[in-house]
Length: 476
Image (tube, rainbow, N blue to C red; front, side, top):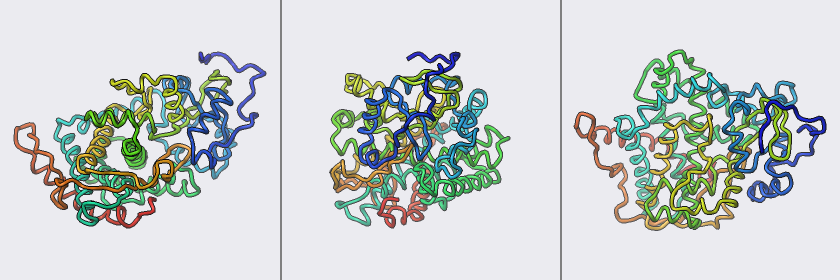
């Protein structure tokens, strides 16, 4: 497979619009997406024409071709203005996914505009990236405190043994608490913001209004932090680029909230699931105390983003068995690429040394920035590690193949992760927060004051989020 950006598709090459496409989002895809990917690969090869809610797109299935699309920004563009069907008015006006793609934000920019926006992120995330800085340590300490407070609340309200939903009662509130802390936002954003982000990513009939509500909430946050700066990501983004309007900053915060709550949350739940369902390579890493490697292996087995955001061909190019025309929409499938990689490279998957081959953070110029990857990785590792630190027994209460999933065009995430649990004797007590030791500040003074502030913040957030953990047992 050698892209030929200077060549034009030959006259006999059928355009995407002329092909019979197979609908992707079917009942078979809901229950067995891996089977659907395998069928498409057998039928079409590495690239398949599919129908996505009535719109034809190319789905890239094989690992090599997916990497090719992700890495060559000059050929595969992110800016939606390259999409020929949109420019020609051939998209249904109510197409559910369009609202998310119309959000003019860093991930949908190219070239110099994209590089400048990434540099702003690099500067703003810098204080939080390194665990040795005050901001980095305090955020990581807060994640531990939040996780421990959630476990303590479970023990206080449901006992040291019983049943819980690790998605609704642990992962969702934990990630929302981290978001409110990192963004410096008021608690009232709440679970409705998370649910609105789900609606956008799932492409349901409420995707447009949900996107608007979430964007409005983030724009209000941007205006608040402009008036009252704090020690948070929102304020540091404004410091890095004072020219950002409230609307621009709101868009950036919105997309980052999507990734932090939904995508990172999927990575937490998927890692827990792979351990609980008995994935041997994941369990070996956990037994060896390699939490980061446990997360990597789980992401390879169960990608947090199933099908990545569209790229648009800048020129005619051959990919797989087809000619992709300039302006065609292409969706690189991380889930299918991982399936392909594990089929052809099991020695890599079973290696005791991590290849970090998974695409959970993306790849190429648009991959998740290094500072964000490091921070999100620390959050996932802490969230997973605290569960196995505190629980002596965690077992699924449903067979793994009967768990309910949100199966949309982008994300495949668990609705519920129901378990039977037993807490160890040293579980945290409600109100006491994390058991992590105080760390010395740069001037040598203990940072116990920061830890105490984190515990106070955690209790305030928990009080506001109780209905999320205990009143929405249906899993969103």
